Length: 451
Image (cartoon, rainbow, N blue to C red; front, top):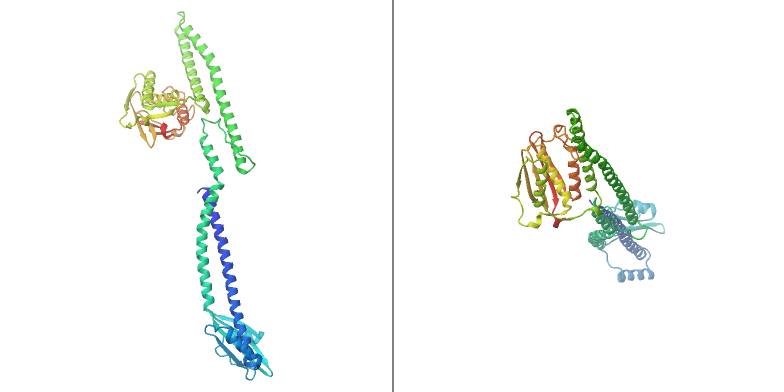
């Protein structure tokens, strides 16, 4: 899950908790206010009832008039005046807890479900009275019920709003990160000279951008140093080796050499040629490298490049048996084009075909060109010695050679160079192999219009 989605959900979760807490407070205080208001109304009736019934007179009649004119009759309202007899009250039908609290404190409030009680003890002379008023509060409960519905609807409505607000907020917050990510994705091994645009300010995005640029500086320096070293070393070593090779060839032309001397010179000449080939491969490996400024990119038609690669492979293996299958080519010729360096791609494909011919004793090598999912697929299948399954993972390592290739000449540089070139062109290589049965190597390259 993306961080943007996580922040949206976190924002939603926090808002949900806050809304629930707020609604709980509203309901709690509404309950408290509603009950307090209703109890006060009951207590007002207790006071009026005690004044009217226990203290008759002009003032009592005024209370009665106020009672009749301004105080509405509550639902199931019941007024009780209980006189003590021998110090006890007949409280049959009243909640015992309510009665006990009145007798202990002189007044009390009590609630059983939706029935409310209020009462107090009145002393008149030597007599004691309990004045009690009870009633139902359906309107209060209805009011609370309506408030609950409003809060519930408001809660879910608020969640929807909060979700979209959180989504918009996280989208806006991560816009600089997305731009930074897109820019970083565009920087590959072939354009390490590119840099991110550093924004103004000293926020986290600016710091991250600066860190990326510093890392790219270090990477470009490291790759440049490596490439320069290999290139210079290969060039400097190749010159004396070429001179040695020339001198040996001159020496071999002398007639006075005996057979043993001639054999030694042939061995030196052969090994010198191998050294030159290794150095040339190292130089190409370096030049296939990582700096896009050095590459000469162009549109390449892959079926034509395959024919050129076959021609190059046959110069190395003139007895090779190569079969080409173009039956799966698309009708649209534009889908056969890739963007890249023609010389490097030709070298990569030639290496693959040459290896297939060499390690199959010139048995049939099948080359198939097709297009799958906007990618050009070059399949090279041989009937050769194959590669041991435990060694397949190492075949793209420089100078590694499989354990069953001792009888074949090679330096272990061709496939690493090929992989470097294919990766430089944003492609990939897949290999399937079985010992003594053969090898299939597939190269995937993005179509020019889809890259």
